[in-house]
Image (cartoon, rainbow, N blue to C red):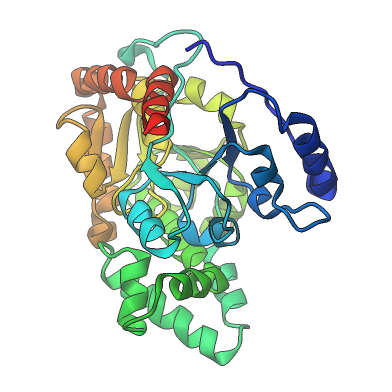
Length: 368
C-alpha cells in the first residue's frame, strides 16, 4: 500500500507523560491518522486538560475488538475527530446511537495471515479437531458474581438467564427487557458495571462445548490458557469418561497469536465460539479459513450473509448445545471429505480477509 507507519508502544505507568511528549513532537508532522487498538489513550489529557489526541489535530481511529461497553470510558471521550472500527453491525448501531460525538463508525473484520510454510495438504494434516481459546472456570465467575450487592446479583441472574434462553438477542436487547426505555449510555454503564455476566456466559458455553465433546468421545486438542484447570475438574466430575479424557483430550498449553496460523494449518477442523457477536465475526474463523481449516462455529447474521454456503464454515446452534458434541462428531468422522469445502474457504479468505484487502477497505472508509 506504500504507507509509512510509526508503531508506538506505551506502558500504563508512563503513558500520560510519553503521550504528552509525542503530542509536542508530532503535532506538526504530516501524517494522516492516529490508529488506536483497544486502549484508553483517548482520555489522556495534558496538564492543561486538553486531550493529547486532539493536540495532534488528526483523525483518531479507535479499533475495538469487543462489545462497546468494554470501551465505554474511551468512546465517551469527546475528541474532535474520533472514529471507530468495530467487528459487529449491531455494535456499530449501538455506537451510532450512544455516542453522537463520534464522527464515523465502520464494521471491518480482523484480517488473517496464512502460515509462512504455505498451505499444508488437507489429507496430510495431523489433527482432526482443535479448539483455540482460553479457559475460564464459569463456577468461579459465578461465585464471584454472587458476592456483589443484591441489586447486581439480581441483574446477573436475570440477564444471564434471558441470554441463555434467547441466544439470538444482543446484550442491548436483553437489558431492555429488564429496563424498558434505558438509554444507550445507561446501557453501556450497566453492562460495564456487570461485566461478569458477559464473562460468565462465554465461560459456561465454552466449557459446555468441551464437555459435550467428551461425552460424545470426540478427540480434541485444546490450545490456550488454563485448560489444565478444566481437565483436572473434568477428571473428577466425569469419571465415567476418565480414560477418554486422559487419552484423547490434550491440553497443548498457551500459545501466542503469531503461532495460530501454523496451528490451524495442521488441522482439518476447528471449533469457534463467537464472543456474543450477533451480527459480526471474530478472528478465529478468518484464521481457520485462511489456513484451509474448516471452522465449526455459532453463527451471526453477518457471517451467514457474507460467507458463501459451503465455503469453509459449519454452524452449530447455541439453542442446541446438548447436540453440539454429536454434530461435531459426525463432522470429524467425515473430515476427509471436506477438502473441497476447505479449499473454497481459503479462496474466500484470500479475497476478503487478507491484510491487503483490510487496508484497502480502511483507506476507502477513511476518505469518506
